[in-house]
Image 1 (cartoon, helix red, strand yellow):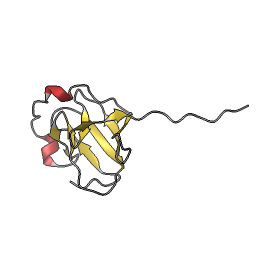
Image 2 (cartoon, one colour):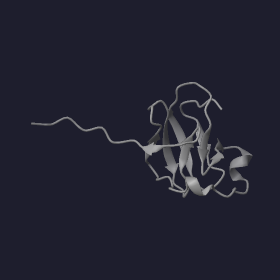
Image 3 (tube, helix red, strand yellow):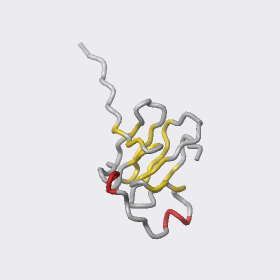
Amino acid sequence: MRAVVGQALASATDTTTVIVVRAHGEDIEITCGGAAMVEAKSSAAAADKQPADSAFADGALLGKRYENAAGTVELLATKGGTSSLAIDGEILSIRAAKPLPASD
C-alpha cells in the first residue's frame, strides 16, 4: 500500500486509528497487531476484528506520534488500542518531543 499524508487508517485487530503525518511515497505495509490496517471509512474497518499477534501487543496511545527507525514514516494515533503499530514488520516507536529553545 502506498501511504499518503492525511490518510486515515483503522486497525483490523482493535480500536486503534491513525492518520499518516509523513510518508516517503514507497509501497509499505502498515500493520496493527500484526494485521494490515484498512481505510478508516471502509466497510472492512467496521467488520469483526481479527485476533492480534502476541508479538505486537504493546498498544498504541491516543495522541502520540509513532515513527520508524529511519524517520521516513510518521503516524498520529487518533484513537488508542491494545495492539502495536508496525511498518513492514518493524514495530514503531513513540516520537520524542523536540526540545524547546532556552529563554534566557
